[in-house]
Image 1 (cartoon, rainbow, N blue to C red):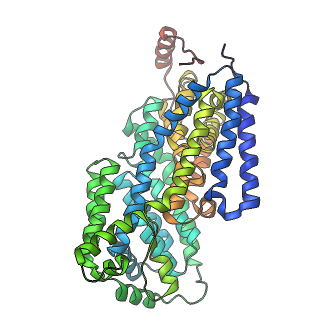
Image 2 (cartoon, helix red, strand yellow):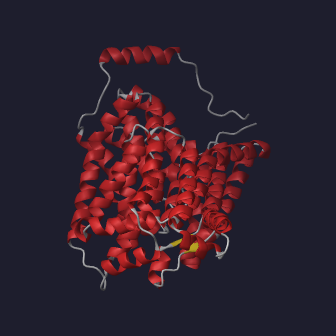
Image 3 (spheres, rainbow, N blue to C red):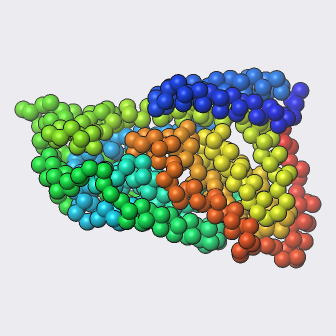
Length: 497
């Protein structure tokens, strides 16, 4: 017989996870993502499994949910692998160095951070993908910022802020379509209503980065011209190389699925490497007397492994290093173990029990919105997946919002204000782990500077607190809703398949 879980059952695995993660930070420092955090998630999953079995769930069922949860993360894992390959071919082809070179010519240090937010926001808005934006324009902007003397964590915070604004507002984004679907409203009502909280959040973010830029004083002497000269002496810098990111953006805008789009970018980068950078191809491959062989070896190496372009400058060599697919394996390992923990917690209804408890304390509009924000953040931390943080709270709060007379766009907006944007602030979340791996900046390093992502959930609660444009059903609409609820079937909360 299956027992209904109590609040303590959900808290115990999370408490142990927090304990393990804290010990990892103390004893492993910056090396926590190399295995310690993955094992912590597995240990917490073991404790959660024991509780689920105690409640009457069979191991075969728990395993089934774990496999299903891991399966839901497979698209993200495959995209992450291809992003590793994309970084490799775009480096040896000279695409990233070219973006850095022209960026250094155009972007002044005082407005660099401001411009970084704007550029990544526009690209992400056009493509609907924060991941693609970070992996392409983000990597290039990180290189430009490093050359200008900015701290890499601040640059990454600006990149993430802009990319997730675009991801949140773009009609092409999966989360922008998912949130209204869960809440029960349409896409364009959802996007329009989000502007009430999102535009002020972005405006504050831009002001903060503009102030930081205006007060910026580089640490030491940053010789931009020397950096540009090093790039031109190492690569064949050409405007033609800009066709690669342009073609990729066009392909994504035309709603080509992410995996084929990124694979197109990978292969295009490889072709341009062979055409434009023969000396780099020979350097990477180690073959000088057979160019077809050298081209094949160099492109393959850049896609699967670590490649360092020798520019004659040790500092520049670090900038010109990519890790390919192999460099993403620690992150993929982290995502898989995080999904295992999320699957265990979901299998026995432990996560749902915690969020149900939160709802009981939500009385006012502000407290109800704050409850959604808390739940989304909770699922981003525990289930480690952006989509789960939108789907589960969306399902749980939809009826509550409706019964209290709030139109569904209030819920859909809150889901995006919290679930979408905070996912990238959690190191073991699929989003946080991915962006840290792509940018080479630890999540906890850039998180304090991801101002848009930090401000958004607070802005959502603030707007609800002052009651600005909170949409409610009319009395006639509420009567119709009550009739629908009376005729709807009763849901079974606990059912073992």
